[in-house]
Amino acid sequence: MIAYGLHGNCYLNLTSKCTLRCCFCPKFNKQWEVQGYPLRLRSAPTAAEVLEAMGEPRQYKEVVFCGLGEPTLQLPVLLEVAEEIKKQGVRVRLNTDGLANWVYGKDITPQLAGRVDAISISLNAQNEEVYNRHCRPPGVGAYPELLEFILCARDHITDITLTAIDGLEGVDIDACRALADRFNVKFRRRVLDEVG
Image: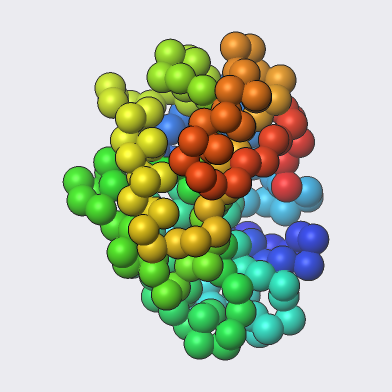
């Protein structure tokens, strides 16, 4: 499933690959469905395939890049599709782990300007120790890179929300909210095992 509808929005599933191996992610527990939609992709779709699967974007409140993989790992497709959606006057949101700059070795946030209206960034923890325990990054330094991504994104996107999951051992939701306040961005509490 490349495109699926929830809550009046269209969600675009660009890849099954991830930067992280989060212990709470359904796919690492062999669950590839969200709200009944099968999201496992055998190969990454092209921009044309994504646009075809989505259909008419103006029927949705917003279009969200979010599946069971990290959308920015398919950055060229994401940018091309987002640009086409914006031409239709539809709001675009990106749900991300905030590690794209780390992956690409450069600041990609300027490329999001004018294509993405809002970014939801999975903060998931108030410090590096708790983050590493639950998100299991492939190398050292992911958490500081995530925090740096927030700063970079603020220069180009005005609507930024950090999220963290209530119910994960050691995650302090109030401390996560305070971190969002410090960055002068919004915060949303998520609930463990509630996906979609």
